Image 1 (cartoon, rainbow, N blue to C red):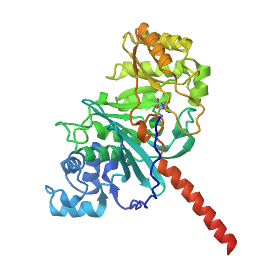
Image 2 (cartoon, rainbow, N blue to C red; image 1 turned 30 degrees about the horizontal axis):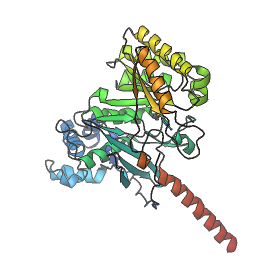
Image 3 (cartoon, rainbow, N blue to C red; image 1 turned 120 degrees about the vertical axis):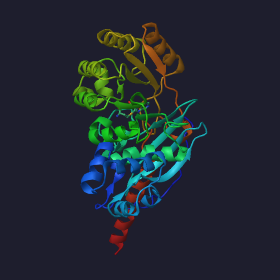
Image 4 (cartoon, rainbow, N blue to C red; image 1 turned 180 degrees about the vertical axis):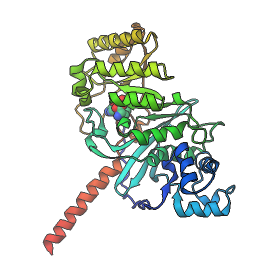
Length: 395
Ligand code: SAH
């Protein structure tokens, strides 16, 4: 993999949010309009002006919002803030990929990755600090679950990348796609994720088309229906196995929501939203789920789904060669197996891509995001505790 260790960085303290101040990044358009009208006694369109300053021009200092009157600016300074996460470090890769470590509060940090391609820029966004689902092949799982991110912390990741790129919506846009494929299970942080995805798609926000915002889930069946009702973004489902026995081993959530229920929810999603295909993610692990019989099983499941959806392209498969991380027992499938697996699916008429790893040199690949500095911080904290312990013992 040619990974390099992150430089040892001591996290500077992040100032705690003032409880008296409302972070405007927590409010989507409707919530912001209500807040301006009810709480600030202002016209609703004032919220639009402020949103444009924040999301189109990346201005977070109310004093710089020059088309607002002095009285409103002062009121905003007293009552509100527009506070994105703090950039702890910023790491470009040799292949153009860019990774940020963003401090959320004292001791919590998440990673966000920008993957530029010919005419698109995709940002991989986190929804939780850590994750509680315990998927066996994911490095985030080794961290356990810490907490949900706020809407401001989620949209703040997009803000940091957009500001870095000088992204201008509706013009020469450099940030074109967002995938909720960073740390965490987005459907377990539903309200905050929906608010943030509303801001990604709103013209007053980042103005991305719905189909350019993708939510990836390990298969929270009831929340897939909720998502369809609230926010029709593109849906990616982490399948990884087409039989329940193997899938339960890899993705323990499958015990609660087995494949048949998951596929039924996916069918309801394509039937009830403007989104007409689901991407099924399948991480290929050597000798585990990459054999010809696994490909046959997957092809049969995908064909059944397309038949039920009455659309031969309703299922797309994204094969992800496993990305290793320290301590894992899994290995990446060989190139021959990956090609053979893809061919079997293509021969069965299923649209199948192999996702090529980017950002190898900065540990930015799928399933590798983990907040390395957090690890180091944790180690530093342990080290400090030990030190204090020995100091106590010495006293
Ligand atoms: N919780 C969500 C989103 C986070 S992971 C989900 O499960 O979909 C984004 C994708 O990366 C998922 O498909 C996940 O299964 C995959 N992934 C996790 N660890 C990986 C690894 N080590 N190598 C390759 N893909 C991995």
